[in-house]
Image (tube, helix red, strand yellow):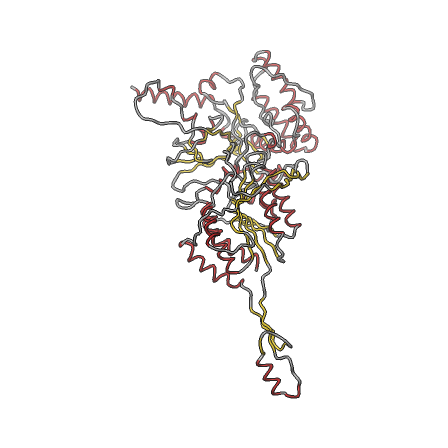
Length: 612
């Protein structure tokens, strides 16, 4: 009997959902194949070219729904377009209109509106002003806009069938759609109006990073990868998250009604920013949540979901051995000004790390690199027949004795070495995203640790001057650099021990770390000075330092480094780095390692190519 009731219930739920959610699915248009086209359109119309195109997460709209929609529990959320400091965010699927042409036109219109809408103003005013700008300057968009308005008006509720307060709001929205040059004022009512699919999301500004209370961990979340043994789902939507304690799961007798137990829609397992849940459809489960609760749990599961989260960082005290704070400026691209003494950076020397030797697993690779890098050693050059020198030139002396009347006195030879006049500072990203798994045995931080070890061993053979530092951050007042090796310090077991002790910590405020590294490298007297940056993601922090702000600050810091006569170069394992690294470093000043496990060997060989 229970099985029959369950079967009937599932059938009834599917039927209601199908009836309530029936749209033009045959005419639906997904975002994925359009990312490149829409990104190009956004930049062509004046949008920031450092932003990527992502799917937006649904938000609860609170508008009136039909009886079938309420019974089926569907259409509670809507995906509206927006643009922030991190990305251009568009609906993951558009199926609101009857034809694929209209749905595609809606994607293009929303992309254009994101580029044209002003930063300030209320919801209606911003969308009207952006609409008028597009209609006045782009005839092709104007033609598709009026077709979209007709389709949108047919989709919207009839004002004659709404209560007076809602009807007044609906008429105002219709007026704003038909006549975007008119002045419309919406009076907030008890119920929100039907979402306007042709407009950007309410309260969305192009640069909300300065006013966010909880920062975004795009680098933290997006670059994390799960164990290859798990089944993965990829989700590019950005979601809110909050820290919470892991729920207790004691066994025993249930002394309460089963209906009061938290459902899967109220809790999702998390290890850092990798969302893990045993449900078959994790993304749909996450869509039902307004905020995801984050807690630590070591229990492994069979399925995993990757997603981007807005989440605050945990606080941690600065190391007692850290140097006094160094105040550094930061570039504010919005105001086009350099903010003086804006960031506080401390350097931790790691003097308490125990000495260590090169791990056995790296020794064979180290010997191979030693032979490959032998060509970088200074060559011995001999200049013969000199009037003075280090040694006797026997050939010249015999020739002088044989030809007694020549008066040949140049019987010495000078031995010189073609010295490499070069200094290199390697700056490694040690943010929490480096905890991502590459395989069952390796994490990104393990690969970075091995890379630093082999890099240091190789440079000690070439006798080039070099320094090693790592960095992480927790907002502008807590930028940390780990001192692994100074320029004036020899490479020894103590340095190997420091490299073995490095651990991931928090975020990636790259601009401040680059400025301090540039200051250290600029003190070197070498003819060539290389600033090598090793990272696994883009600049970010858990305040406003995300998206374009962090990218522009890092770009400005690199420009300052070049003015000092330094040569910056970036090595990354982030496979999506082509979206932002050309803007930050330039087309020929970075490389992407496609297989992160090869980074230790590739890094040393790359150095050889850069300094040959």
